[in-house]
Image (cartoon, rainbow, N blue to C red; front, side, top):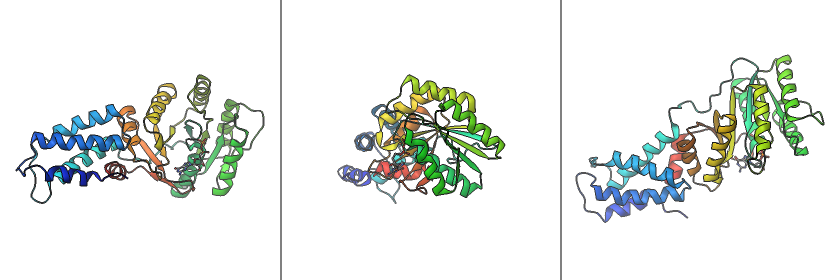
Length: 298
Ligand code: GDP
């Protein structure tokens, strides 16, 4: 569907006269193509604009090495800058602060973002890769099936879930989870909060109350990577209200080109810790900036 950016730039530079260094005009033309590629990959306009500005400074006056074409050279500059922005100064994606047992992890996000699935995927990962004893609890008292959904996943992956007690509030459940995690000698307890279709005050109040009880070591925001700019708005909102320590982008197995990741990183400054790559319990990966950069470039 999309023409590859390298091919596109190759075409642009073929039309330009070969010179010893990238000229201003060469760069201008190339950057127009880069801008289109970013927008097609669902990078938000202001982020694309800032990004172009940063690379135009870097590209100016760069000597064109014999081994690669000017088109490839610009692609390399763009690629390196994408990786730089995506990685931030966080070179240990996937590492969570889970010392001091029992370490609470708060999972937040909108309904349907993949929060419950991600909670279970992450629990499985902590258990298998780090040998952690994990307790999961669903605080979703709005959707009756939500607590059962987490219990079913728990059984499937061999991770304990907090027994369901009907009629309790999210705050009651959070207190019980904390108590059980302490008494039961768990390393980590994960609180899967209720989502809504849109952000609303009641939701935020509830998440804040839960946060105050649990005092989480990590607050992970789960967002649908296919929702582009919306994902960034959601992240800003959650961060201002409850404070987010990291982001998990789901549905990165879909058709999206990953632009949400760039916008997310650039706008919120929050590290992307993991990406969801499918519905299966193993479909969770540490965030790899190079892979997403490659995908954005097409
Ligand atoms: P929640 O409402 O935020 O808890 O969302 P769920 O965890 O129930 O997920 C909603 C749907 O998205 C389910 O059908 C999941 O299997 C699916 N899902 C979650 N993460 C991913 C992902 O990374 N890729 C794909 N393709 N589907 C996902």
